[in-house]
Amino acid sequence: MKADRPSRTARLVTFGRALADVGISHVIDFSDPTARVFLGEKQKRRLAAIERAARQAKRSSKVEMARGMADIMALRTAAIDAAARDAIARGARQVVILGAGYDGRAWRMRELRDIRVFEIDHPATQNEKRSHLAELPPAIGVVTFVPIDFERDSLDKVLERAGHDRSAPTCWIWEGVVMYLTHESVRATLASIAGRSAPGSTLIVNYHTGARRLFARLILRLIGEPHISAWTPAEMASDLRAAGFTVREDSSTAEWNAWYAEGRSGVGRVIYMRIAVASR
Image 1 (tube, helix red, strand yellow):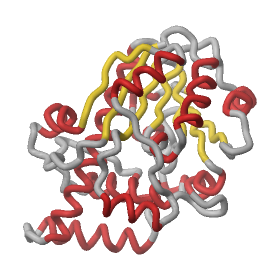
Image 2 (cartoon, helix red, strand yellow):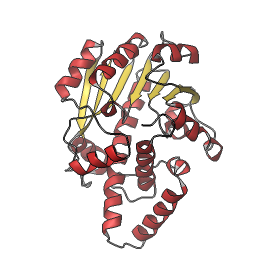
Image 3 (cartoon, rainbow, N blue to C red):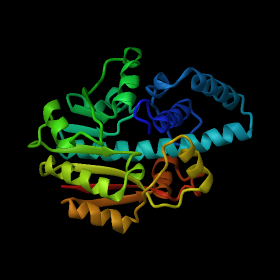
């Protein structure tokens, strides 16, 4: 992303969650009312038009494309939510969201009550998000915004200044980020995460295996946020193990589809997206 503007892909992800929230996703009972708050006016108009068409049961390419986007974002969100709930049940008292974008978990997940939530992101995106917070209800979690320039700032130092407790178990959420980083940058960040992870901590990593379609790769490159890295499950497990984490689960879109959409979602072509859940 460019240093002086909010992330465009973060806004696209939020639009996908907003689409799912209006009910066009196959994910059962999906809800994220925070998503539409962060949309631009053009996206809000587009969302309203798709919602009207879907409610009128109109079959159109526009609605079906929107449904596909809603499904993948809702499935990914549901899988990470489930892993985060499990981490809290295992004793995590802090949540750190790396590259938080327009994440709404601190405002919608009741499991985060009395949990400290640290949102780490580039100042341009974080400032844009914070400008809309008055439109949301009070946060459920205790939110601390932590701006960071990943090219200049130390993750360890910014979290220390923000009040993160390295002696308490942490749930780390790394969603939609590592594919934009080099392997070397990911390994360096993993080392920082490990240094702040007490026993009982959980790391949730969303990553790609490299099979994304050419058209999607071109679009991301055109908006200035290209995917540059990919891992096999074995490679991701190796990098996590080197940082002191043990993978408990590594799941795919096909599994999320079975778990959260009764197999009804058309995610067969989205074979590149995975989530690893690892313990310290």
